[in-house]
Amino acid sequence: MRTNVALALLGLIVASVVADDLTKIYKNPLSNGFGEDINWVKWEDAIETALDENKPIFLLIHKSWCHACKALKKTFGQSNARKAFKTLSEYFVMVNTEDDDEPFEEEYRPDGKYIPRLLFLDQNGDLLPEFKNKKAEYKNYSYYYSSPADVLNSMKDVLKHFGVEVPEMKKGDKLKPVKPPKKENKKKEETKEKKAEPEKPQKSEL
Image (cartoon, rainbow, N blue to C red):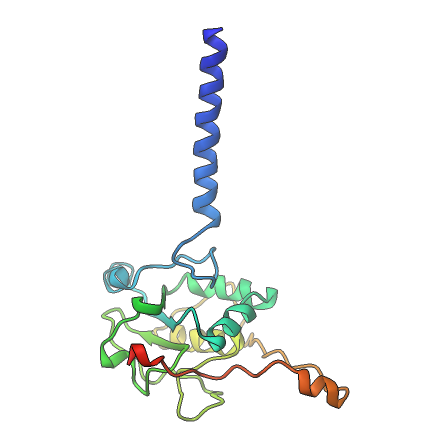
């Protein structure tokens, strides 16, 4: 009887450990919805990690209430973007800050407090201002991205700047933004989802 009880308890312990490990694997609290398979790092640990690993920093600043941030998060779920994003992320110290976790130094607001904005930093945490969205839809928001393709291409440009080659990525392999479906009639045009635009911070955050 005691043997059976002991075995049952042992089984529960093992199951609990396995479940805990699986939770850690499949739920990354730092992902904020941008990919639990990415090795995200807290902002406060980013510079130290970058210096230790000799990697540039990928800093995505977003808010939980932001429509454009949610739209970008959704498009990153595309299968053609996910694999490339995962591959390139391994050459960066990956940081995404949500709500009050963002850095408040003016250096990280080079052209405003709009969101989402994606900045690339060197190992010391200094902004690399030359790496902006080359296909920016809004000229006053140079660090705003709405397409995973443009994010990936900027990541490649940063790695090229540092002389880093990514064997898994074919030379000249550029991911093209997904084109919206053609409008069939006026009704569809009226009900079409609003285009994501960079958003300004709420009054409480100013």
